[in-house]
Length: 228
Length: 228
DNA sequence: GGCTCGTTTCGGCCCGCGCCGAAGTGTGCC
DNA sequence: GGCACACTTCGGCGCGGGCCGAAACGAGCC
Image (cartoon, rainbow over all chains, first blue to last red; front, side, top):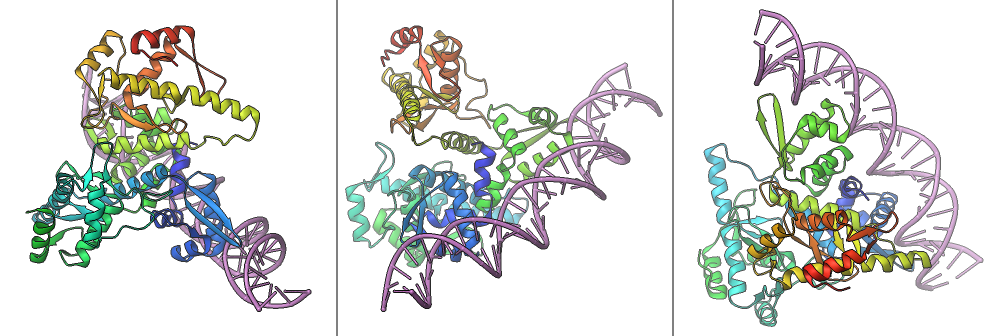
């Protein structure tokens, strides 16, 4: 298959929506995906057949239900790389004082797709490694201590993260303002969700920029020894 | 930008051909790319504008020439991941004795896009690491000893590999038959080209399968201590 | 200033693809 | 066996995008 033929599989909004939904690691039925993407079942059926034939998805029949999932962890990683890149790709070069101010805020703390980025994101990633909650010995991974810490902090990962067809639990994501890595993957997303839910960070306007709240400042210091 | 919009940039054969050509790390002119892809200059001009607007390419004007290159090393890595995945995606599940035999040959030695794969590819990657020609300490990289060894063996890398907009010099590429990594990137491609040029390996039929020749067997043993 | 070359702009043509509804098929339940 | 549900198949419709050539523009050279 050529690069163009492969990219064409994802170049349709409906098929892209299917693949993005399937990043959660679960198997979805054709009907669920049709509703999620807002298309007719016939449309969904045809798109799914193309994605399966193209090697991105795998299917399982159970009675009258057709379940599909991402074919391999490699597919999940590839889709995630693309989604993150597409999201970052809009990063502006500042031509005005307003834009430069916003970019400075984004360098401090922002979201990158669905996880924390900027100095905040890099500092959190560094702290997790320094405290032995993550290891980088043979590729990035959560340690036993890390799993215990997550449980103690009631930070939950999607149950299928890292399993067959699921997005990677952890992945290094290069931070374009800091030029070092912050934490992506299911864990990166869970940390970001937790920080927003517990009001440790809040959004600034409608972009990616985040502000660390006083409560967040304390929590980051107490839980991870992070001081910005 | 959405995943679909991003993928659509590469979903056209002409634009895909441009990006693949630009993986060599050089800057090409619009006219050169038009000829390379076999399209009219007007067609090339419009496609290049879309790729630049989409963030995949960067342009430089020099007089009447419009030079373009891949925008960042991250773009180069992404394109390469996609190309390799698209190439691997056709790997068959064997349904006949002939297919099973061919798959066994491919497990032994084959090409993966433009580099060595299979047991041969993994063994070569392992040997380069074991002999200190590559290091994996802070990401995969060629060591000083490795550069000296390449010079001694007259194995040349493209001059712009690893530089701005060029494909990575080295990259781990997961081998789907061995479930371990073989060596991709510019160095992986150079080693594969050298092995073919010096008749250390030869192609079997029109697929990916390779046969190690007696000369190749000796060369691999003497140069890298690899015995298959 | 004139000529050549590289590139851009724009209108027109054609084709591929995504959408849907209707009808059909297979599964599951009563 | 009958009914409901999930999904598939297929024909029709409409739209977007890729192609090109011609004309125009800008750079470079003499």
